[in-house]
Structure formats: structure tokens, C-alpha cells
Length: 364
Ligand code: SF4
Image 1 (cartoon, rainbow, N blue to C red):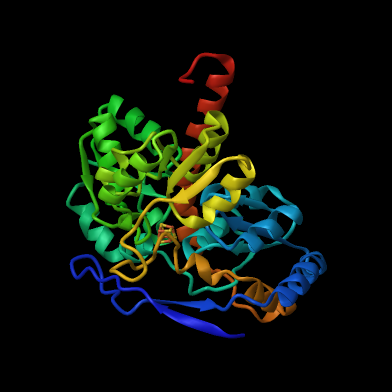
Image 2 (cartoon, rainbow, N blue to C red):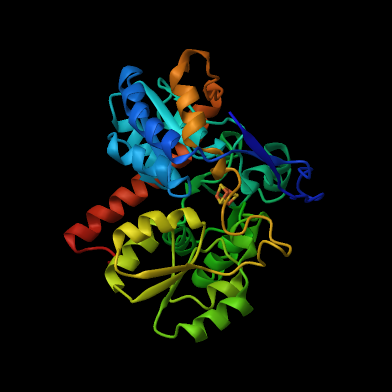
């Protein structure tokens, strides 16, 4: 399989030494080869009794295959939750490493495979568990809230795990019960939540290399060019970009909002991979990714995560041809038990919220 190596400059000497990270991206197959792979992969999934779950940011072909074969396209938590409910004993997780680990935490008895075990995440890389432990020990009386984009070893140290879809509500709930919060790892999401809830928070200063690169000045110019269009922004983006948004929310939230608003067009500040589902949700609308520094300038990701791009039809096919030879995601048993607690706390909180809303006794 032909691949090209994309260097990802990410170096934060205070938090971790990761300046030599890279993404090994498979070359997109020819049209004929893609047609063949799309025909044969469903058969291999069936033969291996495996289920494909994919993240919104992976290649559209992989997203379509997940949907057409009974799997799901979703955010990291929904991928894991969906996988845990299904009967297949093997889950193929098309995403990045922490998503495979989350799937393993929620389905410890299943085999979790990934098209590439080297697909990583700058938020996860930027929050190594030992450094995080030292940070946490400085704030022994704070409630530890970590974002889903962390390793199992970091989740195991948390009181709560949250996603961008429920973080605001959970932090607000903790603040209202008088708790101080230690937040990790995304600084922009943490600052956004702090501003909204006025909670007492200390923040770990990690960032996502994709969202960190959206540019407010250029976005403002684009807004002037398309004054009737709506701007959807993921809260991992910098504050100045968030301030220009008509809607700030998670990937699933953006899809819901686009369906609700039915605007003529949208400018989207998140990974370009989401455009595939957004276009399906509102086919008549027009879509533009929010501006970054641009490919010829200093842009490192240009609105597409290089690790998510490591999930392609060819490596999915290679994996399914011989799954027994593949390395599966392994998480230490005691870490699984520790990490399950903060995840379960979030699942219970969000389940109660849904129930209360249905009964008309909670926030809408
Ligand atoms: S898009 Fe950002 S947060 Fe998501 S996996 Fe890539 S680096 Fe991590």
C-alpha cells in the first residue's frame, strides 16, 4: 500500500516532547480500486463478524461504509456506546487511538481493531499521564474533569469525562454544587466553558492542531462576503473565532443546528470531514470550511486532521483480510475499571438530562 508521510510540527516543551510526530497517510486509491474496495469490504466485515464504527472526520468513503453496513458515524463517545450495544465481538474503530481505547473501556470483552494504531491526536499527545498526575496533585481539592480526547491513563485519573456536547452542562452542574474544577486538556474549550459558566477552573494548556488554526480576521472577511450565511464553530477553536459564531457546539450539535436553521449557506469551523454529513443533512445548502492560514503558509492541518486521514479504504481492507494478524487495542484491566467510573458518571448525567427533558422538568 502506498503512503505518504505528513510531518506534524507539534512541540510543547512544557507539556511534552512530541516534535517528531507524523501521520502516515495512505494514498487515495483510483476510482476503479475504490469501487472494488467498497464492494468487498462489506463482505469481509460480515465474514469476520465485525462492525465498523467511524468518526465524522474520516474519509467520506469510510463513513458511507460504516453507515451502509449497520455501523455508525458519530463522535467518539457515541461510537463507543453504539459499539458496546451491538452483538458483534469485533469492533473496527475508524478514528484515532483514544477512540479505540474508549471503545475498549466500554466493551472490555470485545476485540478492538483500528485501520492504523499510529493515528494519534495532539490533545492526547499533549497530555501525557505522568505530567497530568503531577499537575493534578497540585490541586487536590479540585474536581477533575477531562475531555474525551485523552488516553485511558488520563481518563482513569478523572472524576468526570465529558464530550463537547455535554461539557458545558456538567461543569455548570459542578459549579452550582460549589466545586472547583481542574480541566484538561483543551485550553480553548476550557476557556469557553469557564467564560460561559463563570466556574472556578484551572486549565491544562493543550490544543487541537486542526481547530487551533482557524483565523478570526479571515473568517470575519468571509462573513462580510456571505452576510446571510450562518457560521458554525466547534469550541476547540480560539476565542476570537468562537466570538464570530452563530452557533458554537459539538459535531453532532452542528448537524442538528444546520438542519434546524436551514440557511442558504454555512461556514464551518471544524475538520472538513464533517462536511460530508452536513451536506447529507442539508443537501440544498452551500458549505465553506472556515479559513486557516492556507496550505502555502504556516498551516499545519488546513482543517483536516492528519491522523484522521490515516483511515482509508486500503488499510481497512488490509486489516479485514487478516484480522487475526492485526494488533488489537489493549488497555490494562485496572485502568479500564478506573476509567469506566468517570465515563459512566457522564452517561448517567446525560441519560437523566434526556429523561428530565422528556418529562418537561429539565432544561430544554
Ligand atoms: S481533529 Fe484535533 S482533536 Fe480531533 S483527533 Fe485530530 S488533533 Fe485530535
